[in-house]
Figure 1 (tube, rainbow, N blue to C red):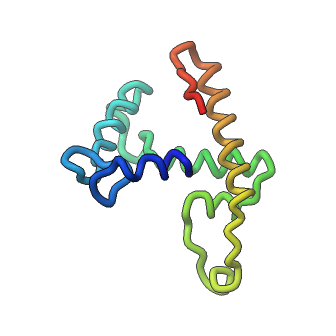
Figure 2 (cartoon, one colour; figure 1 turned 180 degrees about the vertical axis):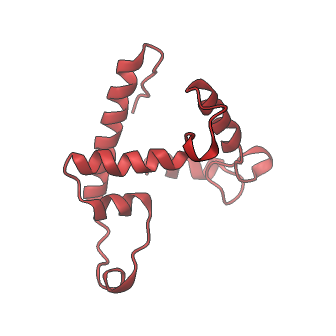
Length: 124
């Protein structure tokens, strides 16, 4: 939150991380194409190739296997709650979300570190 609060005054408009000309960043398609090429999915059928939803699916699946509550993980993904559950359950569970996201970060950093020496850690 401190990073986002510090970043906001630097942005010219309403966006915290604007793209060119202070408009929403739209470069994800180019990034996704580069990722698919690097992992050998450049010519894979659409239904079988990597997408950003694969990361979301992995987030829930891997953390659920490590004991995190699936409802909590859905909250981390920003899923809306439906029906009676959505009406009555209003807890934000921010401390638990933080622990889940920290666990995900540790998992990813550990996997990335084991894959090679071209991973750079950001300092807090």
